[in-house]
Image 1 (tube, rainbow, N blue to C red):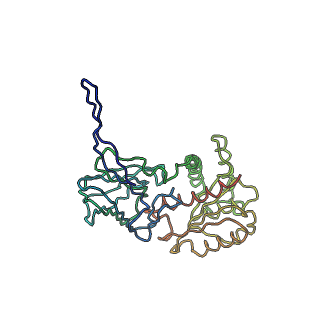
Image 2: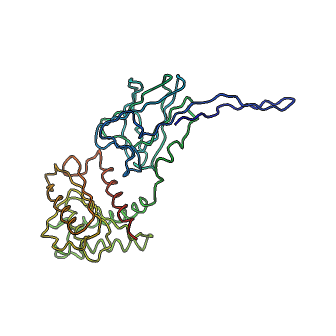
Length: 349
């Protein structure tokens, strides 16, 4: 997308009060990040799970764009990107790598609502075709696009506004709900850690325990509902490792406030859940690493298959690295799961 912006306007006041506008024009070229000239295989243009931003799945990635200019000389490159953590990239222009780190800021998250602009240069560009390439060893920031201009201050800051959706309010609601849930979880764990069973359930009770995990969840949802305008369609659980069976147990009840479950790196034993019929129609997002040597991968596959048999909606995703949340991609893994769950429960009326 090429734009020409008027750069100079002069008022000439004399006997006749003449006004003239100089015909100087500043050249700007807008390139959506999804319009690659070349890219590595792990780069996904317009990723639906990330507000249609360009996302690199996994470590190491390359993205290159071709920019056609009418005139050469010093130009600035304005990148629009989002990143919940510092993920610096390398920048090369016409095959020459530039000194320094680029796109390294933390913008507050990875979605359209977290996009910022960052300007670099000036760089000496040539008339005609120019190549702009970024590479990364780790995981890349999420990109909306880049604008090239010969004026640092005059360029289209709304160049990609129509390409990415406006952020919704669901994340804010989820943040408040998770605040209550995580606080309660900490209190609960400190209360029961001395027990052999960390998560007492209706099936596996602990002597002296005043409530089960299911009752605990019900009480939290009730309390949050009194304090906030809670959308009852969107009561989701996040569990991993030893918390998975308790989350399954809570979701498999005939009467439960839970409408969706995110279960990661956990176990599933059919003998513990003889009645899966209440799972029919409910969404379950199961995340597991094939290299997990703590909670075996076939157990997660069994959960996927058995839940699918009774009519549950199941999304099964894998990641590399074994048991635990991988530091480089944990935010993407978590957010992708909850975005899928949110889409599923939002369909309900």
